[in-house]
Each structure stands twice: as structure tokens, then as C-alpha cells.
Image 1 (cartoon, rainbow, N blue to C red):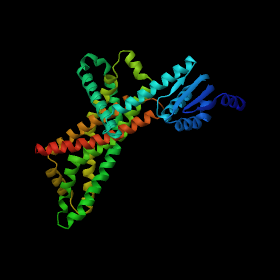
Image 2: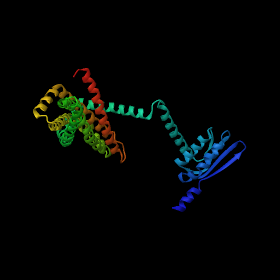
Image 3: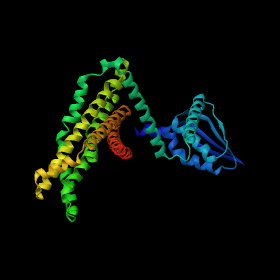
Image 4: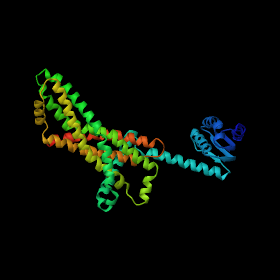
Length: 374
């Protein structure tokens, strides 16, 4: 109501009294959010002008104060830059000032405890790494204690997650594999034809798909399609306090929610990678057939290039990628905060983290295979 607001503003008053080298800011009325706003600039200006002289805040006539009023008084103290004298007769005013001062000191202490050389991005990365290590430890503990909690791991959940992550993603994976095989074959055949080596396009595409692109592309699809779903599903359960209900009933969320997803994805992703490889080889064969190569010749070159070491190495990569993507998606869901944006942020973190983890693992495994001469 306009009349009530004008009354609230009018009840907060500030008188500035100067006596030689002493300045007194005399506040009266209700120093709340409505009353402190109009007095802010005047009080800060007077406190700044009083630097080098004694300053006193007379709060004896203040009838009430809230957080806004306490912040105004502390801001005036900081603007003065020297210790000031506060005269407060109301115990509530004194208590509010003490609480505001303690909150400000705690915030300043937390800001100074972090080394100045560590940036915000580095600190966030260290926190994420610590949380990831903690989640990995919890997952290992859940696996070790699984025989005693076998009733919490239901086969139906594993099959359901395998169906959602694998069977329903199969058409998309095969379509992407077919198109990727065609693109690789066409882009490779043009420059290799100059040297009369376009027949070896089949070898090149086979090695690229089986060793690298098959597991990696299927992992990217899984991260965007399934990792985000894991984060959104578990995050919604956390926001709705369903995870707290499971803990109250004595059910471990790691065993009941995380392990089925880990097992399902680790079993499904190698099959998806193999399906993508086969579809890519069909796409490559389509292009080479268009260039006039017979099917028997293409199949022979594929058999030469696709040895068992490359095939099983790619499937091993797929298992590692699946474990990382499922773990990151589940961890993002368990770390969901509060609010309407929390679930969306968790899903985004799961997708980005899953793709980065798959690419990083691919580089590490490629280096390991090279050192082992595989």
C-alpha cells in the first residue's frame, strides 16, 4: 500500500552532527529495508568524509533493524576505514549487528583460505576430481559388498537399462555407421586413386572403424542419449527425495540404481560398437562397388585388415568407454542440487563429461596399445 510504504520510509531518519574533529551519525526509527535504502548514499558519503576524524554511530533511537540496516551500518564502518564507536541501546540492534559482522568475517575467511594462485576454474576442476574419486570409491565398495546385498540388484533393472541403452539405440548407431563408412571411403578413395592405391581404401576404413571410430562414435551416441538419461532420472529422484527414502528403508542407492546401469552399459556398448563397425563396412562397400570393385575383392581386403587384435582391442575400448559414461551419468544425477534448473544442469554435465572421458580414455588406450605393440 502506498500510504504504509511512505510511513515506513519516513520513520527511518539520519541526522549528521559535527563537533570539531568528531562526527556523529544519529539514526532513528525503523532501520529496515524500506528505510535503509534512502539513507544509504548519505550515510556512506558522511562516513567517507569523516576519514581521519572520530566517527560515532548513535543507534539509541533505532526502534528496529533488519539485515539491510545492519549491512548499511557495516558499510559505513568500512567506508570510514577506522574503528568507530557504536552506541546502541536496543539489544535486538546489537544482536543483529553481531550476527552480520560474524557472517561477513566468515565469508572473508573462506575467501582468503583459497590460495591466490588457484583460479576458479582450477578449483572447480579439483573439486570435480575429488568428487569423482569419491564416487569411484563408493562404486568399488558397492561391488565388494554386492554378495551381501544381492537382493538389491534386480535382473529386471539390468535388462531394462540394456534395452533402453542398447536395443533402442541400435537404429541410430547403424545409420551413423553406414554414413560414416561411406564418407570415409569416398574421401579416402579420391586422393588414393592418384597413386593407384584406391583398392586399399577397404583396409584403411576397416582399421579406422574397428580400432577407433566404432567404439568412439558409439560412445559419443551413448553419452548424449543414455548418459543424460541416467543423470536426469537419478537427479529427479534426488530432487523428489526418493533417494533419501531409499536410504531410510535401508537400501543402498549405489547398489540399486548405479550398478544396474553400469553393468547394462558395459555389456551393451561393445555390441553397439560392433554393429557400427558392420554398418560402416557396408557403407564402405557401397562406395567401392560404385567405383567398380567386385564384392569378393572388398571382402578379401577387409579380412586382411580386420585381424583379431584390432577387433578385440576395439571391444575392450568400448567396455571402458561404457563404464566411464555410465559412471559419469550416475554421478551427475546423484550430485543434482535443488531448484528447477538442477536436473538440466546435471544432464548437461553428464553429456559433456561422458564425451570428454571417452576421448581421453581413447587417447590413453591408444598410447597403451602402442607401447604393448598391439
